[in-house]
Image (cartoon, rainbow, N blue to C red; front, side, top):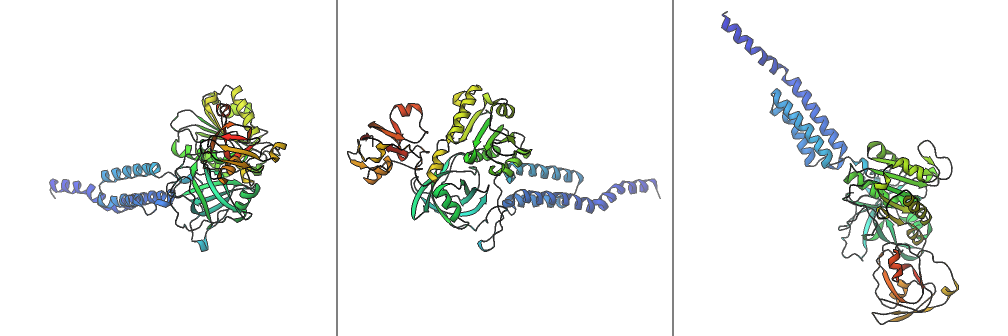
Length: 467
């Protein structure tokens, strides 16, 4: 054999080894690609048969189309980059409310501690903001023994900001009642809304007792002036008392989804460990997201190793949020807790414009079957005259009527939504007379100018209002 033949044979050896090894290499690389496809589908089940998975499967088959070593390397790098991009396009559902397994109404898979998810029914679109639309309840979750989350299909046009509330019409004790409840789901939740309700009083008690997956609720579009401050670079401090956690959970979920690098600290005060709503989710979010920290204070009974004994105080706030003077502070809870906390924040040097709060007393009182309580007095046992300046009408207001109810009874239109002293829609100016407004939602200037919220205002003398 000539030397040239030997050299020619030697040159063919690498090609022989490459082609003989190609099937194992292709099988290995294809397996890696398919593993990424399966992981992608697992992270976003809703996209399992979507365009995303279709593209991923194409990448998985690419090694058989481009079998060169360079092609394999490039294909694998591109596929890993595609997978990373999908993490942004379709983030994992960890930061959102855990969804129960989808199942038909006849055989729904239950979520531990809660109810089952139902097949969806058609939802009426919202027409005007004051109109109610009917929407089906998809699932019911127990957060604590007394707090329950109701998930409903999201009607078309129901856009909202994290922290706002939903107005609901509920039939209880043979009558229809209109109440407002804070939305606990984030604005980015696809296809559903959630409200979280504590079982207290007539209306919320009726929700707990009668509403199950498959039921229908009448709702108005969301509203409210307490919402997440988007577009700022300041850290967020959330301070919740009891069921006041509800709007703050919407804000927390939204912050983690929409602004994943913005620091968020939650301080949550409850009486006992059993009263901690969203406990598992809060702990999970704190583990998975470095920018989020949570501090739960237990005022009564043992706190355990995961919580802090006592109430929210300066030491806890300083430990949990050392830069609190630069943060936006969002508070929600009963009035005594808010009064004490706002005073404490002022003492710590937090500027007043950086503090925003929502008083939960109004919503709780409304759920008890009427407007927030007004202090009883002998004057309230007497009917008084009410004159409407702009319409020229007049009526007599009974002792058990609010200003809004009296106006509606005589055909005078005062815009209203929540009927609980929360949304501010029925803000009305009193031109003369003595009244008592149960809401603390108005600022000092409004009160000095004679403005009240008609839905929670009782008349104590003959009055004239601008309506």
